Image 1 (tube, rainbow, N blue to C red):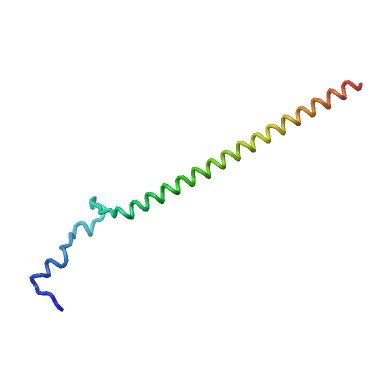
Image 2: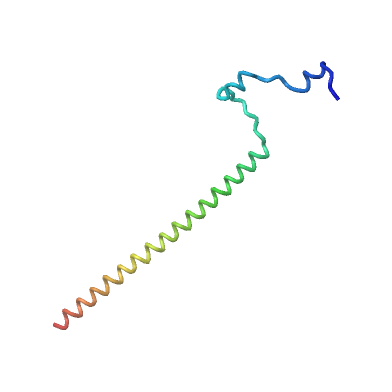
Length: 90
């Protein structure tokens, strides 16, 4: 059923041609609160996951450094003991 010409103005709002043709000048944005909350919670979850991964990497790096340093200390101590033992034999 066709609507009467009197109701045609109420069916569609008038378009703002200047805003449509120049989107950079449009500073009034309509934000959907539900989707923005979902996006914010998703970003928060990603940030916490990245933080946990970074903490794991830092912990592994610390353990790795400790093992390497203790290995070097043991090697130096072993070399010192071997050298002193050789010197005592002569």
